[in-house]
Length: 301
Ligand code: HSE
Image 1 (cartoon, rainbow, N blue to C red):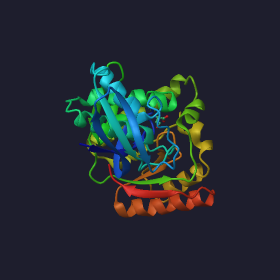
Image 2 (image 1 turned 120 degrees about the vertical axis):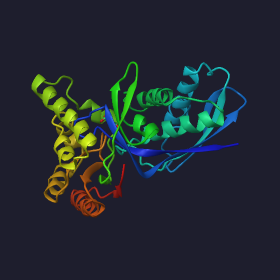
Image 3 (image 1 turned 90 degrees about the horizontal axis):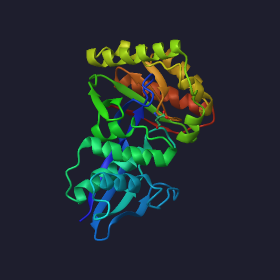
Image 4 (image 1 turned 90 degrees about the vertical axis):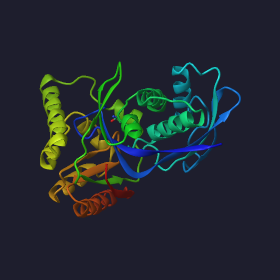
């Protein structure tokens, strides 16, 4: 029988947490169906919602790569086989962890279809392998929250150490995906290879403040902490309208506004649904004005 799993969109980096912090939202996500096949190997036989753009090839599709990596880790690569079907709910190249969501939904569905007990760490590790295939970097900050939910800090990579952080009750997000694409590989190619000591100190102090703000539920502090002088300035030019959208959102009372993952999706934080709706309109106006109207949502962690 087919087993179906869903994985949510994720907003990663969250300002100072480049490659080590991300959160899962409720909104749209990717759905994968998996069923056991008698021959070993992982195959993807159907994809919908991608406009025909995703590769079906097992070594290129993140869903297949992640499941193959999971089976490999469990020593089952040569004996077990899975067939997958993927419904893309997330736009490609959007900054919402689209490639990671397919990978995560695929490992969850496949583990269930094969009756395997698989730990979260193994699933995250397997999904990271797929991220490397998708964009050249095995960053964990989309796949860890997609598997665990909530707000997740990746405290270490080898061995993997993930920490779930508290989610403040009244935290709302306005999330807007402009009508343009940014390939994660391109958004990583523009990053500085080295950073100065002063910048590193400021960034780590902000990340510390961010964790403190989540533990105390202090949303004003959280907003203060979500500032990124390292990655965001290097990427802003890839997203038409982002800088204006940010100024407008902050003027309208956003706690913070930044790029989601590698962009172009941008997010603003608010302390109420009402404010988040107003911020979404502001993001929409700003990006429409820049000629990249897209679509957005008000969401929660
Ligand atoms: N942390 C990664 C980046 C996320 O910002 O490049 C990519 O989705």
